[in-house]
Image (cartoon, rainbow, N blue to C red; front, side, top):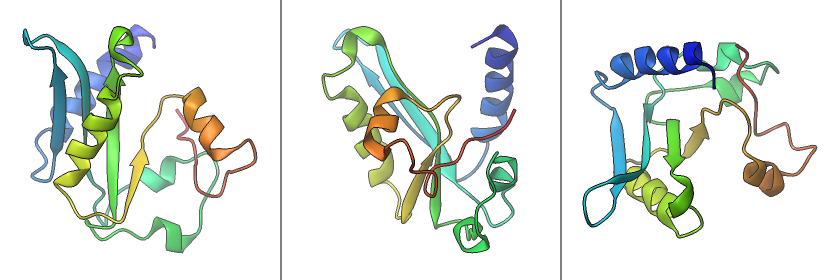
Length: 131
């Protein structure tokens, strides 16, 4: 990610953390060092999230009511702690606090692992945001 991307992420974070529905989870070592983070919020009925997809989706898929979709805006685990279940624990902890029926990961680029899970031609359930 370029510096401009990092700066934009922090600008968005300042706005996102102010939402009353914002949720976050952080993983730490026994010494308190951070090793992973996940945060997001439910998409409101007025969200513009769907408008920025490269491939348009149906109106039914776009329908939001503030409780239907949790937008997972950031999800990261530091390299030495990957493949140890830290990500799964972060994900489960964050989502246990809500009742949304689905979760969308806001990804800068689609992670290889997610591509393996969805398959190369599965575009009906996953879109990409334009810049």
